[in-house]
Image (cartoon, rainbow over all chains, first blue to last red; front, top):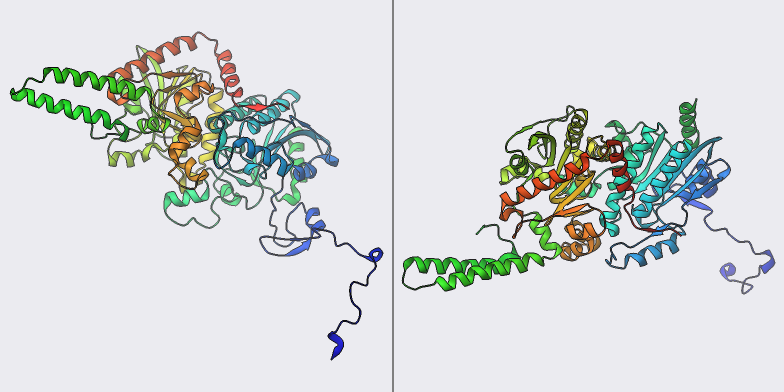
Length: 281
Length: 320
């Protein structure tokens, strides 16, 4: 009867013997709810061990997945956004940018770096969705343009990892013109016959889809990514009907002829590397 | 007076009404209203000059959408004096009625005209899909631009769209890819390209035929990444802030020129392009001819280089 009663009071384990439970030891898949050890999930390139759900990751992770020994030289790292229109909505654009920098530790929504993939040189530009929805303002456009310039100058393949909601409204027409800028640079890259691989991830919509993301010599995507020009909500409102299942997924876009193939992120490096090798030899 | 009266044009309508009445009275011959009529006519001109010189961005957006405004085919017919052959189809899927084009001539000079087309009546508006092209529209435009390049003819694009069509089939047929392809190809076209915004210049749908050596805006048009209404609904979750959004986006011709995102502004007649069609057609024609003679003097490789350099210089950022 009394075995529920506590005999000794307080914590009896000495501080010396106390064991810490590390944070984030487990990862719960938002899609299938499967709980798996974080390190195994990470070793699986952030793809769910059970259902293949691709967790959204950023430039930090992609660079580590692709560059040999995670060694790379970042360019224009410190470039930050201006505020050409003194834009204010619910808050000032300058405040929004400052807060995003503080929150994410990134300077804008794209990072550009050169390095080697299985010994083959490449320039990679990778977008970060965490920074204002991966939106494309002047910094994103300019950094991508300069990354393409680097590829042109050094004749190394250009790999663009897209992940973006589209243009950044707070820079209005300036952000629109980044579509023109990046596409014009890609025209030069194409004329110089330097390979361009567009690697599209979830989600990629709007002005990014309508410019560099769709202009690869190879348009490839991760499985089940949202890829489209108009967002699904807008399309739904336009047609006044529910959207068909699988609309605007990578598989849908592939079936309609706009992707070369789909890459499961588990195989990102061997597949990209294979492609680079086939083009180089 | 047009039945398509905008709200802010009311003061003019009121004066016009008084003038009409005064004229009626004069016709009946009972009272001499000559002085009143002169006074009213003067006042109308004064009010108009004042009103149109101080339009808010939102009012210009309204003018850019005025249902009486001339559309692409009106310009082309007038500019070429009817010497124009419209071409159809993208040679892949179908003909897009929201995008029109073909060869025509101004003063004996053959040019390729391309533009988004809106309709004048409800039926026509539907037929033209409200000036919102599908992917095949952009591909038709590109086909015609390549044709112009092949035969060494300069290209004139007339931009007037509330946006590329956000429909289901548009997504299936690659709206994003179609626009992207045009941006890339237009950047390196080996003929002079002049783009004129004659009404609405909404986002990628406008830019899809908007890469040129000279990008010009008519005085009462707008050009931006998003319409004021959509901007308002995204940022403030409703359409009530559209005027505020129009201010914030800096989308007028003057704003765009100040930001060095366009190359020039074409003045409209008092009251807007629709107030005096012949005048605006003449002005646009003169602008095209002047700019063409400038562009044709430049070596084509240099021209392409300058075009790319111009778009590459756009944007505002801080280097560390």
